[in-house]
Length: 160
Image (cartoon, rainbow, N blue to C red; front, side, top):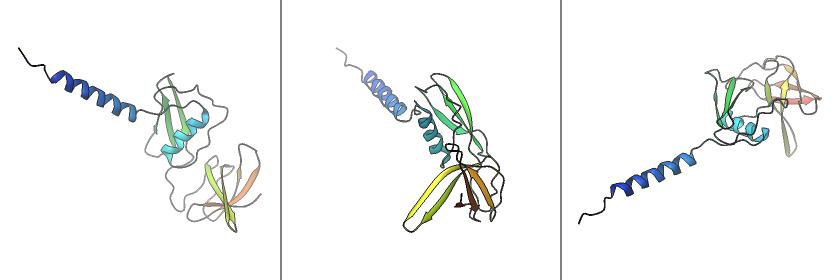
């Protein structure tokens, strides 16, 4: 009488662990444009503004986001099911002091007072350098906001 082989059990256990690991590290899905924006923002590390006219189909399986190149000025969002690809500009490369803002860049603007601070994601309507004033526009409301770029790259709203 021969003993049962342990090998099939080991193989089954290894396969189960591989499937569990694959599920845990599987790319997210994006059912809405907001889900897609969150996935891109998580990769980029800052807010991005998606063009509301672009509405890719819901990604049910395998959403991945990666830089298009070393300049980090755009990301490639890909979905496995249904299959689609979308290149999304991030507005600029990694933030650095004394970085100029280009027309069309999506930036975070801050405004604060005694005990509060508000921030908004806006699009630059013209180019500007640190120390200069620039006009930004909300894509949602279309209202202009005037801000000043600090030498640390931070933009502070100075008025409307």
